[in-house]
Amino acid sequence: MSRGDGPGFGKIMVAFDGSKDSVKAVDFGCSLAEKYGSTLIIVHVYSPALPPYTGAAPMPIPEVELEGVAELSKERARGVLADGIKLAEERGVRARGELVEASSTVQAMVEFATSERVDLIIVGTRGMTGLKKLILGSVSSGLVSHSACPVLVVR
Image (cartoon, rainbow, N blue to C red; front, side, top):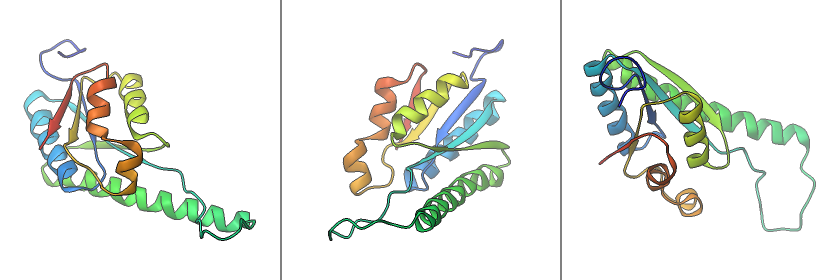
């Protein structure tokens, strides 16, 4: 399975969005990283900030306000990623964190896993719910369908 010299998994990527199932994915990733001496990479993908829509006639939004919304979105994403890294550290596992801005979570994760030559992707069954899930579909299903490496879905 490993692209490295030994058995196991050289690099394990965990998809993390702060949901209960993604916390379970980090926990499972830590267990495998400990067992195989793997590099653990926790990845959080966040959507680019979109201007608020009020339903009223379109009005120009000052660029300064958009920059503030974008920075707030990125700051929240950094917090989510930091939570994932902290979970690994609490288990005694050193993890590298990667923050990715993209409109497609699945595409961003597949591309990241390919470029990093990841041996295994771990993802929770369900992530954050609501409109984002409706628009993007199931991230776990998308990863299983499109990833070049094995995907472990944790329930």
